[in-house]
Image 1 (cartoon, one colour):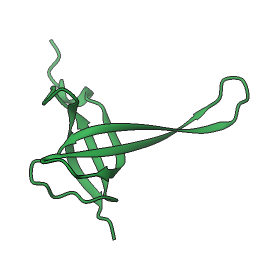
Image 2 (cartoon, helix red, strand yellow):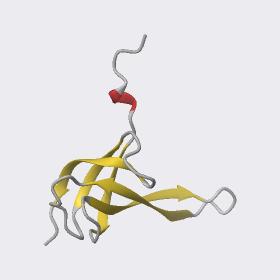
Image 3 (cartoon, helix red, strand yellow):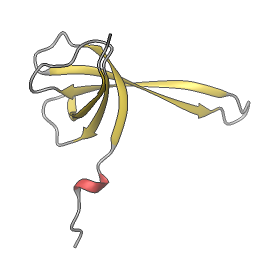
Length: 87
C-alpha cells in the first residue's frame, strides 16, 4: 500500500495571465522541447485554471501550482506558493 500519494502529484511553475474570475486564475506554463527531426528547441505553452481561495494573485505573478481533484469543469489545479509578485 502506498503511504505518500501526495508526493506523486504534478507540480508546475508558471505565470498568471488572467485573474478576471472569482477565486480562479489562469496560469501559463512554458516549456522547451526539441523538435524530433530538426533538433531545434521550440517553446510550448499550456494554460491551467488554478484555484485561488483568497483572490490574492495579480497578473504577472510567478506561482507554483499542484494538481488536485476536479474542483469544477475546467479547474483541477491549486495554488501552492507565490514565488514572485508582479512589479
